[in-house]
Image (cartoon, rainbow, N blue to C red):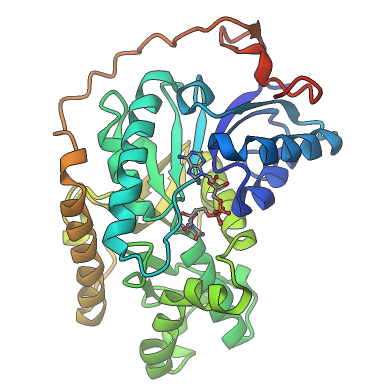
Length: 365
Ligand code: NAX
């Protein structure tokens, strides 16, 4: 049996997590032979709901679920984590401008970045889901000076999966036979679903669909899919977001298939002329727990224009949060010692969490 890995998750009592946690516990995210410790984090008002979810997880008797701890303190919840899923965020209120949403969430992600820097495992992989996901990932990463920016990613896999699913439905193909779609840019209405390199059964997609339909209908449909789901069901995407998180982390950890790639929001290194430093969705290949931007794709004017619009939106978001972005310094790569706290040792990795947080449901307060 492998040693358990620690997964810290914020927003653990929210809608996305309600679909996600059970998938993680069955081994869908990392592997069917990998035991997991769930370190579930919420705001104080949601701790009672979280306790209910923890009881349900316990009642499933998942063989891979080593243990669960519940936290209303982020620093404590992220202690020793190998994987951190930042899902919790303040939702956009009525009449709230996007910039207001950015400004509201930014300080939270700055503090979370600082805590990850101090308390998470040195090899931690972080996925930011809470919106605005790309800019929140930028803030968290810049506030974690001892970690590499490559350890931080933002979720655009839902947009990638929407591209596959809607294209499959339109063409009658099975999504598994569609390869090399790409989502560029921000997880927002400026994102660009690129079919120029995509194939179905090995043949170019754009020879099989009407290009006007692609340009005039398809791209906009993917861009506004989130809003369409809210309009139809009164809540934002939850189950599909959970599935996308599973796919994103699974591929990052276990690799993408040789003949394909995926899309991830990652720090730009200047590839394809995209401004360095912003968190931008690129097509990537994953292997050995790392990802690399797919290089050498031909970018036509139509695509370039769309990619630039999304880049400019991200640059403007960066401007909005500029005061929360410490200047990048030379990474020390020095291991910080993990802060030990009193309590019962969960298992032999030298990390203790306070007693009250263990899932003994009659004891969790
Ligand atoms: P919910 O409102 O159902 O749940 C959010 C949970 O986060 C709540 O339980 C809340 O108490 C908790 N929370 C808030 N601030 C917290 C903090 N500082 N620490 C810990 N927990 C905190 O939202 P849900 O539908 O689960 O969506 C979560 C986030 O994902 C939202 O920001 C949403 O906009 C974003 N999404 C991002 C997607 C992406 O592809 N990147 C797609 C789905 C989703 O829209």
